[in-house]
Amino acid sequence: MSRIAIVTGGTRGIGEAISVALKDQGFTVAANYAGNDEKAKAFTDRTGIAAFKWDVGDHEACLAGCAEVAEQLGEVDAVVNNAGITRDGTLHRMSYDDWHEVMRVNLGGCFNMAKACFPGMRERQWGRIVNIGSINGQAGQYGQVNYAAAKSGIHGFTKALAQEGAKFGVTVNAIAPGYIDTDMVAAVPEPVLEKIVAKIPVGRLGQAEEIARGVAFLCSENAAFVTGSTMSINGGQHMY
Ligand code: CAA
Image 1 (cartoon, rainbow, N blue to C red):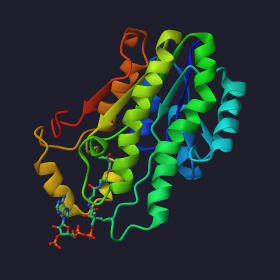
Image 2 (image 1 turned 180 degrees about the vertical axis):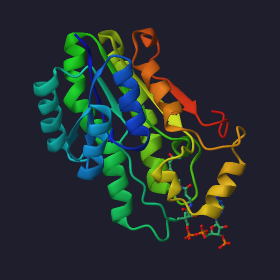
Image 3 (image 1 turned 90 degrees about the vertical axis):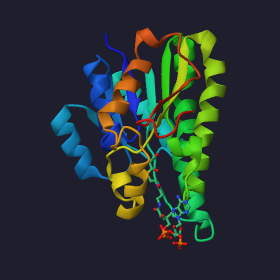
């Protein structure tokens, strides 16, 4: 019987590539999404991967959503916390709502998903949690105090939960992507993005599949001794 994985924000961008990579690796995948029904349906038609709608920033919705996945597909063995949003702006212009929403979804989502799925993994003595952090959580980024704080929090969350999961066969790791060719990065003003790309030693944006391959490894049997680690996949932009 195949293992079950949930990928949050799993129907678009990096999340879509992760969902597909885990399916190719033999997982039965549930791709969570928050809003865009049309894109989620197109994703399911394209990939054959079931999509489940809930807001990862909503604690109760997460518990209910994960229970529904377990009922339909089976107990959850792997969670990839990929869902994330940006509300960029310099601090003096950033509203409390922009701060709070990014913390609620990006960091709160990791807590909510772990609360829903970690206890079962612990009981069954096998689990994989992969949290998608960011180069901007490692190095900071002008105009992103909210996002950088949430992503930095994800790296701390990963190391703490890794210590709790280790003796139960549950590994918890993070991936810190650099600038990847997705809608999120496309929203960065072009002149700003040009300057950023100029600082990437590999000389280009990353591809979503390049992140997905890292996630697939961390979710595999071969990665059983890797826990509490952060894999930076950023074209050399930040060597951490
Ligand atoms: N360092 C220092 N100064 C900077 C700077 C930087 N990195 N970026 C901009 N500035 C300065 C500009 O030079 C400018 O200064 P002057 O007025 O003296 O010329 C000033 O800040 C204002 O710059 P903008 O015109 O860009 O200001 P804005 O208010 O229109 O926009 C911003 C500000 C929203 C932060 C915009 O610069 C922006 O979107 N930046 C990109 C932020 C970013 O990289 N986001 C990543 C999104 S992708 C992602 O997050 C995925 C991931 O994990 C990597």
